[in-house]
Length: 444
Image (cartoon, rainbow, N blue to C red; front, side, top):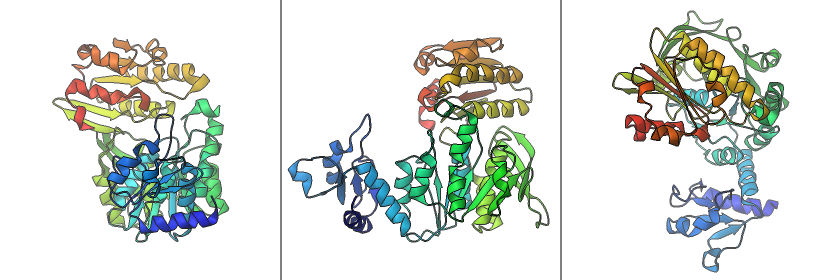
């Protein structure tokens, strides 16, 4: 897009009340951005947007003449969104912390958000972490914000670097390296290289990085003078003191502290120690008072299908089905094993997707962790999960091809005597629909 056109578009943006990419949630005075995807075309909703008093509609194709005076034409609406976000970022003179990683990035970001409640901070919403979500998030940052936290996701090499060129982070965190999207990358080493594009960008621009010292792929970055390290060793050290379902207590300490900081959370699983450490390390870097950090961690309650705990009569449902990969499933199963305490656990596990040629071996591999847990019952849902099902030794087990089949099947005998029901699967499985079995459809 030509500089003059971009400057003109930015002037419209400054005079508007923001940007909307969804006509259903558009507010008066916002610019409606007509993006296109495989299953949608924003240009079809221009009338709806204008009826809701959109300030302007950004388009890249012909529209009816009656709407043309309310539209701003660009060569490509997606590229224009990204270019405008970059242009806006260049006008912002604030620290921007980017967060990526295989697992835990959203939980870390939400923990941090809770710690920043009393700060003038922008934290990206939900899971807006891709080539659309990141520029959209950047355009939400306003003049009164003192700093911003931006989540970044990827499933192809080079994506993180491209997102960095838009967000221009001054600090960066890679939570860990796992087997997410390994079918697209080919190896865990390739995944590590892709995630660490964030570190490379930040270091190239004289920024700060936060490094998990306990992750073998990330540890080498801890040697940089601009690195803040954390883990069982490092600048910020943590350990688990106590854990049970929905209760994880940790102790944090730094060399210059007089005593440990004890934080009681509503999280389940000792793997969350690293999410807590990462969020705390960033908050400390941003000079957030320790009282606000402790309060933020303590008051955070997981939701949105990420380690979400739902109590139903005499059962506890742990809903962790926003996404799934071999690393996160393994961590979940080990956590359940450690806090089982004689409780009967029913596992409902769906397919792990985007594993490519690794799908068979990874689905077989998680069976050994299920057998170590020795659950009361196992319900496998999907197509790939059958490979797990065949290897699981649980006495009570059933295999179903889809969540729709599960809803149509009486699975009560597999869950009626369970104390804990753990539900885990990739987003496409839509396992949250199983809450209908407990009349909890509206709970998520």
